[in-house]
Image (cartoon, rainbow, N blue to C red):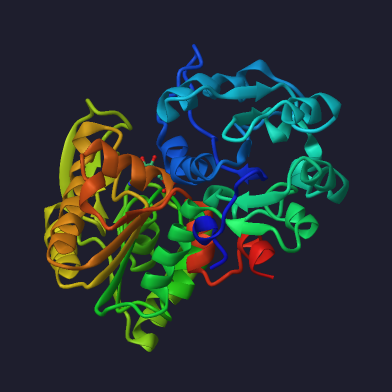
Length: 396
Ligand code: AMP
């Protein structure tokens, strides 16, 4: 991959697209800085080479122009603390003032530009906007895996204006390398674990994984649509009625393709969607009326853990239950533990998707899996076999 590790950026103006879309509290404190930390190696490389680091990102979903709560000025101090050096800020991302701010930079300096999405042109992939961004620098680096599946101005279109000076950042190239380890020559058995609330949004990845994996574990809310498809009774559990037929056909496809489809055998049920509800366990196909399934039960944990421990390659996207509530976090925690154990035994494990990553961190597993992806949607699209515009733009 064309990444920056083997080139010198000395004296160059280097425009890096990062993903600083971090959660902020009401006082604009960053509540999870993983995405910022993940971009530090690339930024440090430019600093060490003696280049000028110009950082661009989006933050949140501004509707129409500037909104205080989405200003990237809120992250400048934290970035400066992490880098242990001063970081400048430009109150726009294009135009004369920004050009002037860049004109004042010295080699080794760092400047953060204002939120790209204050311009609607960003998400529209507007070439004129991309061109204005491109004018700011000599070299373009994409290090934003979280938005690599979007053909936005700063993630893909801009690359056209840097035919010979476009590169992957160190984060983006390690994300792709990790996914390639899992997809191109996975050590077998290869197991994928898909959870979360709904089948919608994950159906394409489930379908395409049938062509790659030996075992597919399904947990979380989507498992109840499968339980219904098997003729089960699921009480008030999450159900996507319009996906029941699809679930039936997925069960059939797994058989045809020789993929072991593992659905939860049992369910932890609650009479209300809160941690203090009355709780009981049942078969997943026999959830009583008035109860909803919010976690996988002990039999499922045993069965899933065994499959995971037998695996040599594991990918995980989506929690096994409502892990945010302690009483329904056990399934996700135990599956996480099994993944860590398998990794310790030599398996390659890759975790992605906002909620699974949050779970891995919540339970202290972050150092015990092989790779944590910073991109949920981008990871899913890559696993589906789709080309990511942000990747293609640099490769072509
Ligand atoms: P996703 O973004 O698709 O990975 O979904 C993550 C969300 O699914 C989390 O907020 C979980 O609380 C939720 N979830 C997992 N299992 C269930 C379940 N059995 N019922 C309802 N929500 C669930």
